Amino acid sequence: MLNEPFIQRALLAALFLGPLCALLGVFVTARRMAFFSDTISHGALTGVALGFWFGMADPTLPLIAFSLLIAGGIIWLRERTELLTDTIMALLLSGSVAVGMIILSLLKRRPGDIHGFLFGDILAIGAQEVWLGAALLGVVGIGIFLWLNDLSLITVQEEMAHVCGVPVRRLNFIFVIVLTLTVAVTIRLLGIILVTSLIVIPPATARSLSRNLRQQILLSVVVGLFGAVGGMLLSYPLDVPCGPMIVVTCIALFVASLAVRAIRRRLPTPSPA
Image (tube, rainbow, N blue to C red; front, side, top):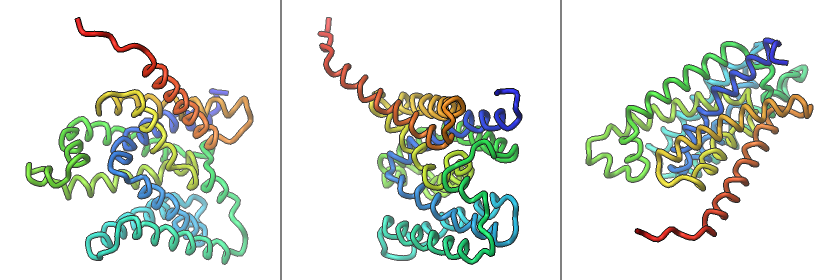
């Protein structure tokens, strides 16, 4: 099994993208941006459709480009209109999905790979996407290590971060770009429909067990790693799709965390000496 090159690429992708999504997910969930990642992933359908429209065998490049365009549109409309953020994201999500479906319907023949983009096909992931995931994980890991205090302050109280001299606008812009690239790359792992789950479930699991932000970051990365790699390895002997199996594995870890939390609450609190 592990001797096959496509299995090795899939395992490396899960090894890199699982912790990456979980790491970003801690700040995504804390800042209530889960709908943002959902908008980006569903908006990527138009990028995929455009790639097939132009006859590209691999539409990853237009997928990433259109995802960045959607992210830029969210920021631009939020700064220049009085619309609420969730309204803007709902508008762009529904509009981009509609455009993507129209483009796909106009194609002379239905691309066979569209199923992989919708529901994930980690076994078809290329070496370029694997190393892009590795590079993103390295950049995000180093960035969070260097600017953890600033990011934490922005997450908790953005106005206070402004007062303290934190470059809020620049950090927010970088965070949005990195999150968009991560969502776009992870679509190959889980698909457009399921990609947000790997960003939301691991930090939600970690939050049930952690007592502070650093614990939540560490536990979220561990859950993301075990969920992605475990789901990928389980899918092979069970003969089920990798993407849904990864999500089910993460859900199982979340349920286990709730059980551990319930047991912990029933234990007597040690009295101070």
